[in-house]
Image (cartoon, rainbow, N blue to C red; front, side):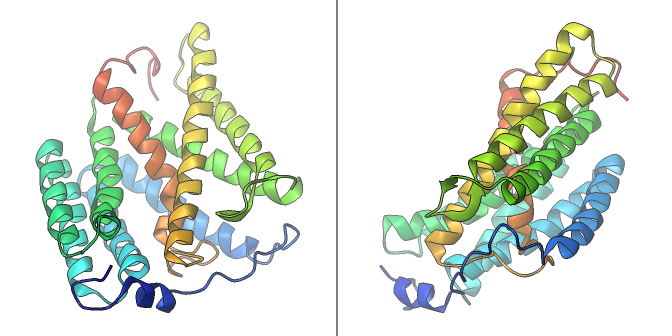
Length: 297
């Protein structure tokens, strides 16, 4: 299995950054950087989501550029064609979605993904390369589509933020403080069942809080609790999937762009998975949110 540039897959993996030994759960050395960078990113995300339109599209576009760099860095280091095609596909998806042409964007994205994957000489290589544009572009385009849905687009995004951030925070502290059995030590030595349970419960609580914030009827607040738990668990599984990808490519972090968090892919992997879930539900049930958002904000 070799890339079109003649560099073997084994050589690519050998150049990838080796994963260092896992930190113990009592190591809080990165906490300050995590909090600072998390607050900056959260502020930027909420502000862009509030204004929507070109503001949110610009933020998504910037994230796409960073994530395409990270994906290429992991899968085909120093391959300009891989980066260019992944960027063209994912960024095109974001642009078309911002113009309210989600399906045209998806078509362009898949076309670029196939063109990039065709350079590879094996099915595995094809999937690794073509998957980059899809893995990055599809959730980003869906995220913009969710924000533009009237009349509850903003509420949808804010609820998604609240649930995923609550899940991520409590999963982190649950794993650090409680520890216990690992979820999949071969993929991510730091993720524990305690963290998964704590994150899922926190997501459920955040969902219930959204029901209160949006003034939904009392009979629907338990529905928000369940929705929050399901969305949180989906996000945490997205985080685990990202760990699988990094292990597959032999790196610890997608990059070092964000202090305390690694790369953009490392930071928003949960949000990407949850966005796809919500997008799929609303695509097949367009009126599913009519009652859940009550009178809105």
